Figure 1: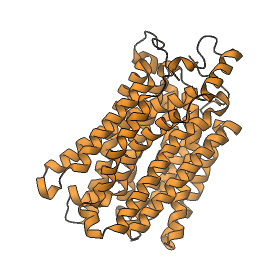
Figure 2: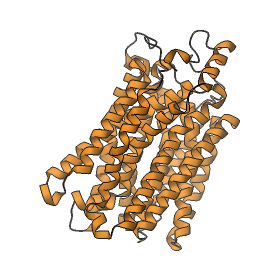
Figure 3: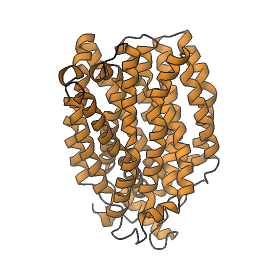
Figure 4: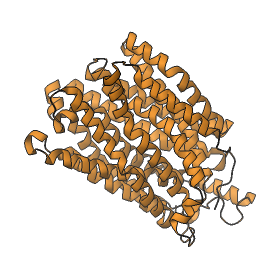
Amino acid sequence: MNRHDIIPLGQGAAGHPQVRLAAARAAERVPAKVIAATVAGNALEFYDFITYAFFAVYIGRTFFPATDPFTSLLLSVAVFGVGFVSRPLGGVLIGAYADRAGRKPAMLLTILFITVGTLGLALTPSYEAIGLTAPIVVVLCRLVQGLALGGEVGPATAFLAEIAPPQQRGFYVSWQLASQGIAALVAGMTGMAMSLILPQEQLGAWGWRVPFLLCLLLIPIGIYLRRDMPETLETGHSGTAPERVKVRAHSKLITIAVLVIMGGTVSTYVANYMTTYAIATLKFPPSIALAATVVGGGAVLVCSLLGGWLADRFGRRPVMLWPRIIIAIATWPLFLWLTNAPSITTLFLASAFLGGMASIGGAASFAAIPELLPRSVRATGLSIAYAIGVSLFGGTTQFIVTYLIGATGDPTSPAWYVTLTSIVTALAIGLLPESRGRALES
């Protein structure tokens, strides 16, 4: 299959039935390998990013020694946030590159960046071995990883939207978010296996590095798969207007999209934080805490695909809105239950609830935003909205909830942050038009 087998919806006579039919037939002929290439590359990049969050306690002890464990953990999650600083830059640069040169070269570039960041993080000696150089290298690696992820989501999501049959676009695009569930699932299973195999001392000394090294072994598979992907962007299609002018014309939609992404981001990163929360606050053993990550990852995988299917059946807006309202109402009682009756059951339910409900609405939003943007800025606009939303709110979530728990002494305080951001996101969703059944703009 080559790039000419895909007739982009919206090109030429955008609303003509024959154009839509040709696009649908072309999408149906897409081999499973093409979807796997998008999902695999995305999953590898999120696997690496999520793994850092899972092992924040041990990474803090390795690179950020302090007089007390809380300060070490706080420094570690602060550097986790550093990875989000470069996301907007990656979104602008790689997103614009995807809208100019194509989705495929942009997605190959992001895998190259994540390889560099992962290699540095996996092999950097501890603070005890090389002193201040260690945290500096870790910060640089996090910046490179953030650059990669900031530029990955826009091109990957645009590609899935453009290759999908119109009536299944929500489901196709939901695989982008589902790949993050796959990443959390695999990362959690790997971490849980390490915690069961190794004693605490070895896990903290070197065991936490093994999942990063495994990621390096899998990256060549992602590159191999993406090399054979088709291209959905026609050469010269983006026009001659400067990128900043084209993006500025859609600044209102991009701003609303940032607020829509905010709620799902905070819920997701609080769910990812459950491993650290279970170890540091609830005093669970690492194996149980990492098992919660596996449960949460499975919930993200299943609920993302469910959300995409529901968005195709009932529309984007209701599937975005109702899960967000449920999260706003139910999160605090759930955290109260978890802290008053900490058990494997309550921990697993909290992880599954936060990750799963956020993924249902997130899948619908990943379908809606590209549908509301023209092809010439589709990857750039979504990349910017996602990178800014995740940088401002995902990058700070773990630091904020760690600080809130330490400052207030209230272990349920993360729930209030989730509730507040969910209310703002629900209001932003009300400003988005319904886009189900809409032809992609050329």
